Image (tube, rainbow, N blue to C red; front, side, top):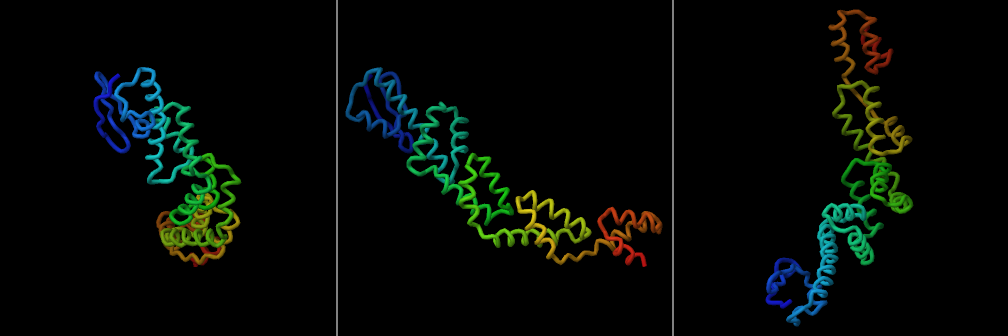
Length: 245
């Protein structure tokens, strides 16, 4: 097949125009097979070139995917296979990226943990679970996660509590505490640390007065029904009795 013309089509890509056909080839493939100085190539060589160009295509697609955001191996594998690339070629591309340090477990874990610590409300257990779901090994995760000072998690919990406290002033202390315990546990914080921080908060609410007025109106002054309703809302018997006096 006679090569008639080369036409640049994009980053590192050229359209190679033959007599009756054309191919989009990567620059590295063109240079490797000296296509710029060859006038004719046989069909066997064409097949070899096409196959190698396919390998470059998988690799370049992976490079573009990780260019602007750090990715992990699982993300890259899923992205490439969803593109319809052959699994063997995908694994070869991933291996190449790992060999040159562009898919590095330690670097990814450090970046991921730092982002979650600084930009989210996630606690250590949730961060660890997310990384394990991405197929990182537990010892790799713990190696860096355990370097985060205990005080960092304390401060993060305090910020969450203070924010929620301002939004839940209409709730009883009991309801607020239970809500915070559940939320913080789901965020991935240590149970003992949650208990410690919640035991130190100063929670003031006018919820009892408002709920008492609603109950008094609803039950038309029936103290037994009022007390039972307020107890179910999480108020203490002592506080309710003070309100009834």
